[in-house]
Amino acid sequence: MKRFLFTLTLAACSLTSWAADAFDNPDTIVVARDGTGQFRNVAEAIEVCRAFMDYHKVIFIKRGIYKEKLVIPQHLRNIELVGESRDETVITWDDHAAIVLPATGKGMGTFRTYTLRIDANDVTLKNLTVENNAARLGQAVALFTTGDRLMFVGCRFLGNQDTVYTGQENTRQLFTDCYIEGTTDFIFGPSTAWFEGCEIHSKADSYITAASTPAAMRHGYVFHRCRLTAAEGVTRVYLGRPWRDYGSTLFTECELGAHIRPEGWHHWQPQRERTARYMEYGNTGPGADTSQRVGWSRQLGKKEAAAITMQAVFTLGDTWKPAL
Image (tube, rainbow, N blue to C red; front, side, top):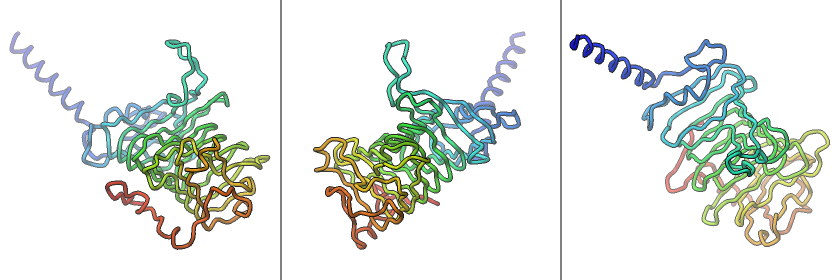
């Protein structure tokens, strides 16, 4: 009997070991709400990924609505989340800042409202939608990033106030061919982020960006060859306002719609005019007329603008060259 129990124990340990290691490989994990994948929820697929992977792991997410509040933790890396369809693969949640927490009796606040929070480095999202579909009752973050070297390719980020929060200084994010919408300050935070060929859509008369770039950082937000659009009836939108002193934002070679206000920028608080780093170069469209821009913003010269490349912006201690 003892020998039999010992054999069973060994078998159980072997099975447990196999189960723990089953996904420790570079193979693709498939998530599908209809049960045709290995998991029905994205969170389950993230959970089985090994810490500090030295290989690339793809989580392929089939069409569907995934109502999940997700965190990709700091101990993961080299993960790629790929949707089957940008518009039909949707990760959604609906927290907002005014929700009262039972433990404190106070509102949730902005920074807990995220749908997806990425604390890991070297994460890529492709061809999917991240949404905070809360009603307009307060700040409601769809994407919250603290990781470095993050890439978002062909994605949609949907929300109202505070849609995308790039929440950690000395980190870098690249948004390529993405659609980002919101109402107030819907791209905000201290990170260095480059937006390439994106559509930036304003849903209300308000502010697009609220950079809080640290003084020591040379660059905050750079929008290159993006298209700024607006919902019907939206006619008075600022390019940005500095959430903190030294906020840095550049729009270069972008198409600015008629909804952009002639003055372009707002100071938030008057003293921030002295430190805000707000710049434009080579923009087109009805909102690109600079004749009435605020005096504390700048129009770059050709040589100065040419020096602001993706590689230059993403050199922070080390040089990051995203593989597009």
